[in-house]
Each structure stands twice: as C-alpha cells, then as structure tokens.
Length: 275
Image 1 (tube, rainbow, N blue to C red):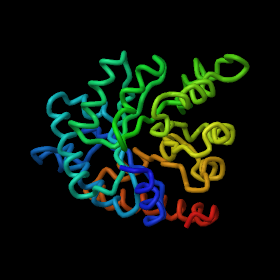
Image 2: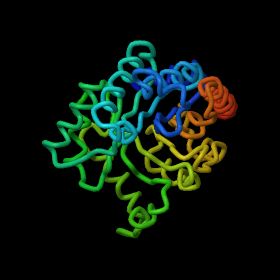
Image 3: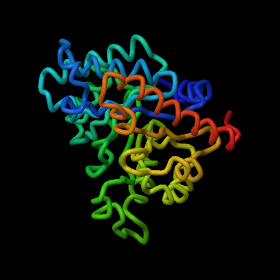
Image 4: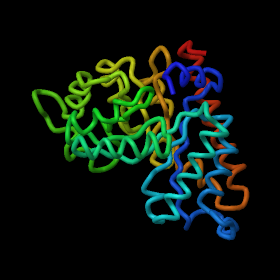
C-alpha cells in the first residue's frame, strides 16, 4: 500500500484509528467456542463491525502463536479475509521482529509474502542490518519501536547517549538507513508529551500510537502533539474495543466504541484543517 492511499482512506473515513486484534480465547464469548475456528470468527465479527470507522488493523502475533498451528491457520484466514474484503485497509503485523540480516530476510518474507501484511513492527536494538531487509519490499513498511508505553521503557530508552535520550538516537540514526522513507515509528500514547520533540526529528513520518483506551493514553494529547499537516498518525486501541463487551453483542459494542473514537478523531482532523 502506498502512503498516499493510506492518507486518502484517512480523509474518506475521517479517522486515523487502528484496531488491535489481541485475541485471547479466555475472553471471547463462550458461544464462539462452538465454531470450527473461534479465533477467526471473533476477528471476523470485530472487523465487520469496525471497518467503517478504522483505517488499519494490527493482529498481535503473540496472541495467534500462543495457539500453535491452529493460531497460525487462524492468522492466515484473518489476513485472507482482510485482503480480499477490505483491501483498502492498512495491515500491521505486531511481531516486533529483527535479527541478523539473513534471518530478517526470512521474517520479511513470512509477513510480506506469505501473510501479505503491509507492515511489521521491528525492534531496533540490533541496528540497521537487522532492519534494512524489511525495507527492500516496495510499498511495505517497517514500524520501528522508538518510545514505548510499558513500565520498563525507562530502563533503556531514556538513557543519555551523546547528550540526548537513546530513543532520539534511534530515530536520528534510522533516517540514514536504506529506504528510510518506508520507516514508521511506534510511540506510546502515555508518552504523548514527547511527541513534540519527536515531531521535530521526523515531522513527516507516520507514527503508530498504542496505549489509547485500556492503557490510559489520551487521544486528545496525542492529536494535539502528534498530528502533522497530513495526519501522520495511526492510533491503536485493542482491548478497549474488542473486549468492550463479553457477550454475544461483542461485535456491535466494538463497533460503537470504534465509532465514538472515529468521531473524536474527525474533530481533531477538522481542527488541524486536514478534512
């Protein structure tokens, strides 16, 4: 997918919402467990209910891996459904992969060719040769972990190196890598104030912002500090949408929560003059 296609969808739907598919079989409605593939049935219901209000989906790979071969088959079905029924939607493999070059090539092949994702999240600790294989694919994207929302983020990401936090060094160095225009960046919603500084480093890049909803991040703060002139944001909500109801109305309630977030996002897009 081209970034211009993603921007067109953002304007058309008046939304920069990404729905995270973190499927825990212990939390889905009991009635779905009678279906041949409960994981796929749950994802399908969520997708059909939320598709009018979001521009991206982010399957969290761990939640599929946890079920072994069954989970991988479910992931393949989810991606087939998305790519066939909603080809305009941006897809993110939340896998946080990266390794030595030849291994990263295989990860890239798996997610970009086998599962046909548009992007994959990447851990940058091993440096450019672990990331660049993901950037060799035309119109595919590597979403680099820059500043995360978790409690342990301060263990390394804020370490002072060369007079600045390590996460700033990661962003700056990555801009010199091959095909850096295909990089996007993860910035946690609970670090919204840092977005002002991050935007000075990468004013035109897309940022994936997890942590709105169940993790307590503020959509208003993210929008104020992170929107650029074209939008440049994908704000993710996972548990706050997909588990908004534990009953058989899970899909309807998820759709309503997604719609509420879309309406708030439309307000911020209008304020910025994007729509």
